[in-house]
Length: 296
Image (tube, rainbow, N blue to C red):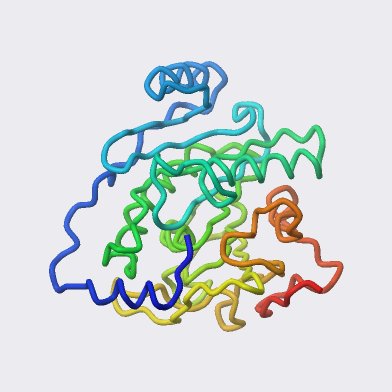
């Protein structure tokens, strides 16, 4: 979901001095062991609960609902990509766009299969947190992200032993990934943030993660990047600025929800990072601390 200035400022008017309270869905979902037999048993159970034919690691109808879907063979995969969505998603819109949890997982998996045929890759569409609505005052804070980060760290820990694990984090999802990375030792190789309002940190070093941190901003992405944080309010520095210290790559010519659309060269770069730890830099689009340029 996007963070246009007028909507975010409107949400700010809803902020009160009351405490955050307890968000629904704040307890991390229980995960199975990442083995063929345990996964098969879990998929069978979640299919019965959801009434579908998906490979769901977890499923919860409470509140807006949470679900974690696997595309590909997770037990056999050497490379795993976890997509973390932004604001407003629930079970009702788990599918539908290339930045919805299921849509993103399918887009990344399909492109990985095209670019590296035969490579055992699994992609996880992770709606393992209660993604805030744009009308919820907490959307301008890191509070929902901090709760989501606990669940995301639990998933990352469950994936230990895979050769490569990457987080691809869109919009407010990048705040979740930043909060997860703030705990030392997060066991992932790369954190890729797309259309990020901030990661809840002033610099990449504040994240304390051993992972490589990447950032991209599309040429037409109007995401609000206030560049400040006061306690839990705000998101910290803009990740594509040189001072932040991320590796910045070209986000392509599109807008806030276009990074994973078919035909956007940013999708190839994202998949390349997940597979190899490097983006395509043949046009000089991958630089330390550089601001992204539009393709043309």
